[in-house]
Length: 175
Image (cartoon, rainbow, N blue to C red; front, top):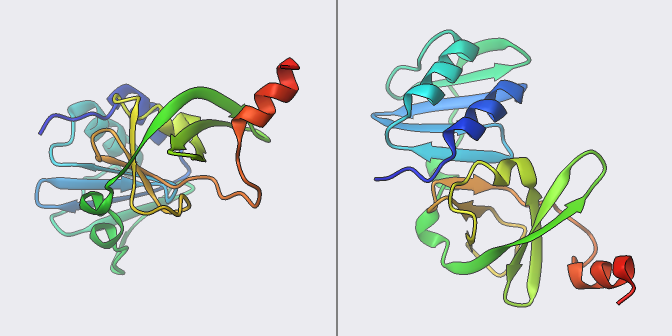
């Protein structure tokens, strides 16, 4: 299966992340920082090299490695990668807009699902080579969203107010 993950951006993100969990099941690799998750059946060599540089080893089949602030350990507890990563249930299609909203210290990419909007970290959005399509598992847009031909899962920002970029555009440009 062709990978729709931008490996250059993934390597850059993996170097920035202070917490990474890496699980290998056969030839399938799951990589997460608990805000995004990548599932790849064949791990590209540049990503493997970056992960090896961080973990200093490759997980055995069925093993999960966890790195928190540079400390690496093999963990026994199940992180539920397969329970969380369910792209077959992501059937509600949306589109990524070109609108980027400034948050405290980050930028959020606006996504549109019919008449609803959701926001995800723009750096994580950059991990996808497929920039337009996005899928959700339910009408509740606080659930994980899928990108990159459903190989990338990103948790959306949780907000207490309704996100409507049209109102903000009108305010900023006086339309």
